[in-house]
Length: 283
Image (cartoon, rainbow, N blue to C red; front, side, top):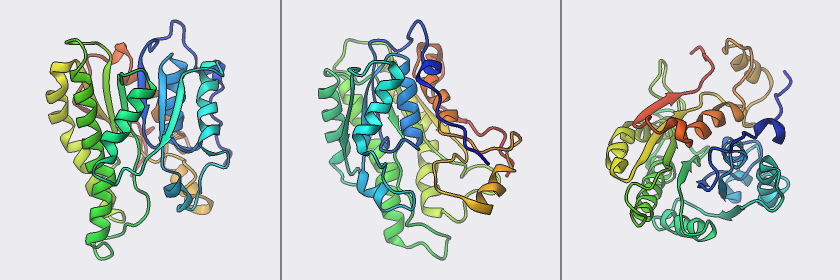
């Protein structure tokens, strides 16, 4: 089945630009085949200045590998979405498994973006090192917790401290986290450590939204469903495609549309929600 290409830069742009003068940090944006890249392109096309976080060693360890053009090519692709090769798009590395790494990333991104981060898209995740109930062990559970859950909460904490230094009720504050289909029929019995970690984010969404409401920051979590990020092929790929009413996988730009929209003022009255963008996927 042919893949749907990324949208052209021209088709991404909106006039007027709803995120002009806003800044965004997108984690897990190290490959042009991923959701982070697609979301960053949307944000940039809407006028936002963007900082891209990447962890190339993780991608190199996976079957899909690192982006062949490296982080620089990823950043160039985001700049192209805005139609300006000099657009304010920055990038930097970070292994978010360390306890201090999330706050350090927030500080670096804020410095690059002029001292302020309006939009935090916590898209990163640990792939692999998982299994069924009989396969997992304490090391697997701890690894997924550290990257998929703890680092996200620490990112939000550091982001909140940064936003607290702005004038009261400064508009445009947004946090979007990513979950999976662990709470939907059938669950994810083959990826138990990942499902547990991502389920925690879905569970804490309402609490975080209440906490950040006084700073005029909305908090929502997106379940993108099965998305073609180059992790499956062959007969298994086709089998999954047939379970979508449209007969195709979700592509990275499908959830990216929702993520970017949640960052705009049009979504300012939506907070504390876990929203699925699955294209009617049949489990």
